[in-house]
Amino acid sequence: MRQIPVDTTNATVMVAKAPQPKVKDRRTGEIALDKDGVTLMTVEVMFSTPDEVEILKLTVPQPGVSEDLAMGTPVALTGLVASAWENEFNGQKRHGIAFRAVAVTSLANAASASKAA
Image (cartoon, rainbow, N blue to C red; front, side):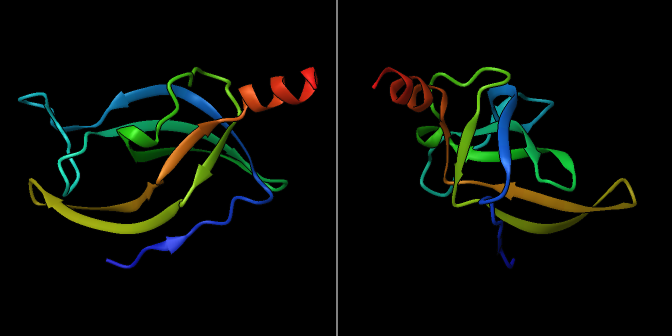
């Protein structure tokens, strides 16, 4: 599947929903892991550009998620990519765009540190 890099330079990004483990199977509650066995997290962010605002649901490996992410926290997204997906469930075709990032890092501490200096 082709991954398309997403340019975040002109975007303001804030946490819309605190990180949660990504669930692989809702029936069993199994948590999703990447190919290396690392737990995957879901982070919802408000992605705002001068033209529009979107809520994006990102998949991020757990080590790449800052511990202090709460709703409204400004963040930086490292390695954000978009991938098209399609599947069939109960005879219905579904499709969309999945977003994945290497890291979601809080900018709140960086802003506080620069004000203190």
